[in-house]
Image (tube, rainbow, N blue to C red; front, top):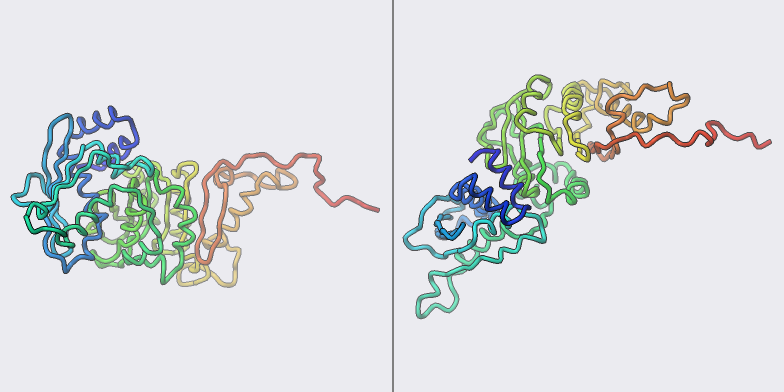
Length: 379
């Protein structure tokens, strides 16, 4: 399947039943089933069940009166998906394909899976009263990927090995801004996959964002080869965040962005280059986040602990954004010529080593002229 097909399914999941069926027809029921079962497998946390025996689950998925079977097998903490009917499944999950699509990529409140039924192989045995708990647990974990779930970002950070809680304490701040967006089909770009030069290290926060934003397309940028972390809904782009040509090419793939998280080199020059290039491509209402701003004070990263207002440092530069937030209030008005970002930044939220910038139109107008611009003489 392609990124465009996944995007189309995410979009279709919130539309009418007729539009859902039409999308399935265009993409093909087999491809749609593969996309959805991949999502169920990735959300099931099967890697926690390494001591469990193998479990084979058949998904009998119907579309326009025709049913096709697909198989998910879990074994030693790994999940594999394949088309076709297994010989002796532990359970058979029957469901309309369009209903499963709504469950996986729909919004909370509409994901009810009303056409689903489950047949348990072991319950056909005469002496079966309670079946093997590992089968129930595995199937339950697979199916919860199509049900409304609220995630704690700090817990996800720990689970996926991200340093955004523990080494740092960013996730409680992220929770405030991201929770209202969790059901939206967003394009999210994180600069910095992590793990330094090792190709298989890092990627924890990309997996965290994928789980939290169940309808989001997640992209990671790194100077090193991190293709090992590419997954469905996780795209990897290799290049230098300080290279404007590379960033422009990356935007050709991602399209307009909703959230940008700069957790890259932390070199002050790179932070400013990335912001100047990417912020104009952020959709209105989007969030631009800069992590680890302590390097603004570290000379080894191009920072300074002496010249605190140096606009070549990340904190010094963002201080100018505070002035830009109030660009309409300068006295006299011609004392400041508004920049493009002055007119597009609606809020700046500073936390320890973290800045969250809201993109919104900032042209509400200055205070009325009848409000005095100097203290009133009360003598």
